[in-house]
Amino acid sequence: METTIPQFGIIGNGELGSALGGALTKKGEQVLFYDRLPDRTTTASIEDLVRSCPVLLLCIPSWEAKGVARQIAKASHPGEERLVVTLSKGVEKGFVTMDALLKETLPKAFDIGVLYGPMIAEEIARGRRGAGVLAVSDTKWFHPLRYSLSQAGITIEASGDLHGVALCAVLKNIYAIAFGVSEGKHLGLNSKG
Image (cartoon, rainbow, N blue to C red; front, side):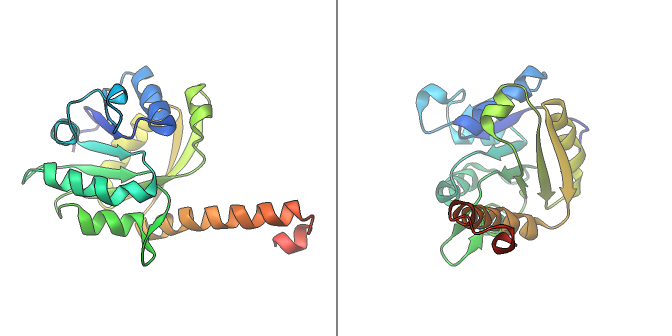
């Protein structure tokens, strides 16, 4: 594995995809985008993105992840070394987390990863730092990805627990709602605890 990533592919050029891509590009990284909206796309197809980019970042809503993973699988060719990292937080029917969804949908030769943490698109776009926990199925990807993202202003912490990180990302959203209700009802710190 090279010590740098020659080109990133970002699927989903909305707020987060655009912010991450912009931050990576400012630091000299090569980034291609694919989005369902043609004016947000810099490559002809997902197949072109899969062929050109060893690392794909999925910056899409969780309900689109399975369909996109199927498109990536169709576009793949035997022997390709690829990492697909999702930033999508959520679960599929049956409480299938994003790591499990990628594992069951993508070719076995593909490595998978999850990246979650405080990475608010507006902050990243303004040049403010973000942070994330990255878990990957093969650790050879960790250092090159950490380096590139660090250069782009995202501090990365490693985890060896793909499923645990994906599960925590889902639970965080549930806890945030519960804390908001507790705060709105002025129930106090004991209730939050």
